[in-house]
Length: 185
Image: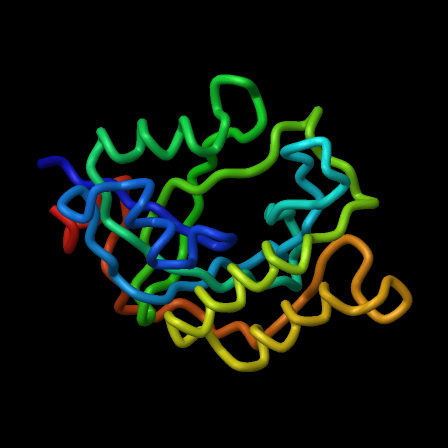
């Protein structure tokens, strides 16, 4: 089975949700990973409920923590459906994430341009899903605390995103990366 890298950073951090979306035999959890030069924002409009879903936006000082998976091509097609790719809600993006100092190339999803609204905030339930997933995977406490700020009243929380956590350089000994890193073949 051909394996692809996938980087989860929003509600897909929750193991239960990933298992409901992708059959366990179609994915292998690699563990926590970080994406440099991006920050998380809750500016993705998914439903007309006035709340924002997680998105990543470029930021040279930012870091987004999440989970790296190996998934099958069939699983990626399932993820496309969940993420609304055919309707333009999300688009696939190839990113380089660090997993224990090894640089991996992975697919993730970002909001389609027509679904971005910077005035949105996450619903308490949605944010709790992300926080639970972040805790399940042992993401850095500093990052988890910064995510919690999105649940604060507007005057106290970041408006469009956050910058968080120290960035560590990639290991000079990091193995080559590709859509299917050598250690994932």
